[in-house]
Image 1 (spheres, rainbow, N blue to C red):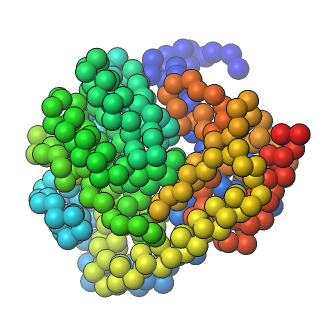
Image 2 (cartoon, rainbow, N blue to C red; image 1 turned 45 degrees about the horizontal axis):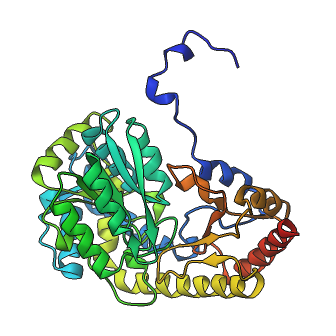
Image 3 (cartoon, rainbow, N blue to C red; image 1 turned 90 degrees about the vertical axis):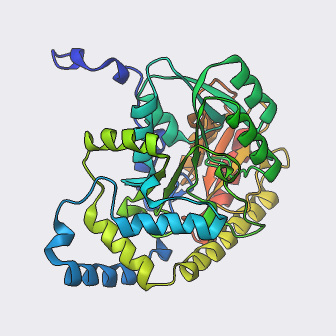
Length: 397
């Protein structure tokens, strides 16, 4: 395609911006014959359709036209109060509702943090592998990315300390619980060590927590914020209610919140007011705990089915993480085996996944892949892993 006068005027930031690799794969998986482990999708069979319908009717009946009017940039006050209270009851965190900003999913929270903190060339530190959505959102502000590898117990603390010692890191982004894409969870000593390092630095620490409510085995762990005086937290209703509502939040101190509000008012003024009222009504009228328990039980069964099938049908040289919650497994293939080549064979077998290279900001061998287990029934998981095992054995010869 030749340049036009318009395309030659694109902003510099667009030169290295690309479409989401996962979203492009999802176009392929629109074929109903393909079993997809690619998207980070919750299980739609547990969306509270009837309850949301009833909550919507009540909101429109009780609030009327007010539910359809503009509302505040900060978000619906009772919903912000619910978020603050959830932090208090789950973890004993003293969060003021004024520290909560309702966003269009936690992805918007990442974009706002990029606007507020990142200048071109600033150092931004991620986990390796790291969340693709963060790489995309923060990457629009032209930082210099660096990465610290994950271990089985969380981020490599020595590597994090060395990076903080040798680099002026502006912002550090983490997903400490059931990390996307790996499923790894930071253990308590790692959380405490990260908090100590951040207390000693001027780095803005961002703790994203989309998945901790989805624990189906083991014991809950407090967020790193429990051990840290400052820091920014992100959360979402996408995993515990429904992603189509597009509601999440940023939790930050007064000085950060003021700037987040300025950035958001220049972007979209406010999150969907009607959706906020509906979600709050749902949370008020129905038992969220019971709903989450149903999701946990289902995801636990699906995770166990996928792990068991991998253990039975994949070569022993394939390493698989064993998460206690969340939505993902992370596979490491034998040396010299390409995940991209495996994807091509897998599509021929009508099964899909995400190659691991999409989750790195540094060059690494192409031998990792992410599997989502939350969005497929146990029968589909069994069949999909059988198809994937045939593709893998074909690649291995």
